Every structure is written in C-alpha cells, then in structure tokens.
Image (cartoon, rainbow, N blue to C red; front, top):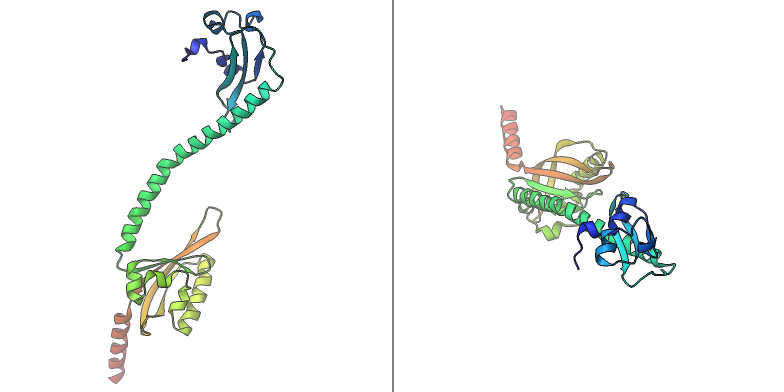
Length: 239
C-alpha cells in the first residue's frame, strides 16, 4: 500500500545514513510513538540506506513486520545491503542514460548536419585513420577519382597516387602525425590511369589526451588550372 511520508520508518534510516535493525519498535523509546507504529501497527524494522556513487543517500530499503517482536536473522542487513547496491547501480545507469540521451541526440543532429554539408561539398573530403588508411570519402572525392567509396575504404591515401606523388604524400602524412598543418599540391591517379592535379589541405585530429585519432584532407581539383599555367608558360617561352 501507499504510505504517507510522515508514516515512513525509512525516513529514519535516510536521516542517519546508517543501517537500522530494531527487534521491537514498541519497546524502543525512539520509535514507539512513530506514526508507523501507532497507526499501522509496525512491530519490527530492518533497513539500510541506498547511496549513489558520490555518497549521497538516495533513499532506503527496509523490511517491516506487523506480527510482534522479531528475532532478525544475522544476515538480514547484509542481504538488504546487497540489494541496495543493486538498486543504486541501476539508478546510476538510468541517470547516466538520461544525462547521455540529450547529448547523443545533439551529436546525432550535429553529425547529420555535418554529413549533409560534406555530402554536397564541391571539394573532395577524405577522412584517414592515424596510419593513413581511408575511413570515409565524400561523393565529390569518389567522382574526382572515378572510384566507388567501397573501393577506397581501408586503402592508404598514397595508394591513389603515382609513385613519386605517393612518396610525397607519405612524407606529408608523417608531418600530419606530428600535428603540422599545411596545404600542398599532389598528383592523384584516377581509376583509368589518368592523373589529376590537386590542392590538398590536411588537418590533424586529436582526442582529449592528445593522441592522434585521424587526419582530414580537403582535396580540390586544379588540373585545368595547372594546364592553363603550363600553356601560358610555354607561350611566354616562345616570345
């Protein structure tokens, strides 16, 4: 049944923050006039506090008898304490879940907005793990190199370059591992073997402990620009 707070013997356990074991509450000066004894006829009580992981008392678990004095078994408080630990753990899990849910919702919304921006970006976006393997490429990047995303996942950044450019890319990536950010020009090799000149900007991603968790590369196709520059250079050489 539902008990008014004024009639709850558990309040005494919560107030003291200590286990309580009373064989006969009617013979105990501290409890004989308690409303739970006078109005409900409680005769014996055993209770333990429920603490959270910070030591605060959240409530109490108790057992009451109504059939006279009780010779409580020696293990009753231990059993209640074990149960209280289980209850406290469940409360902690639910509290953490409740605290996490709005954060997770915000992260998912943020991730969705980020992915929307990445998916429609006019430049290639390439996400690499700490050793340079492909974790993600946006649609623009797959279009630039004429590969499917599934073809690129797990392969090294340098696998999509001519040998000399691959050496430069590995050197560049080593600098990223040390947190050095820079922009450079690299030559990629498309699926059909043709080459693409690109302007590549790389940034390192670190976790809270300072460990490298990945590298994000922004890739712009500058092939036409390079061709125009070469044509202009040749014309200038002719005069």
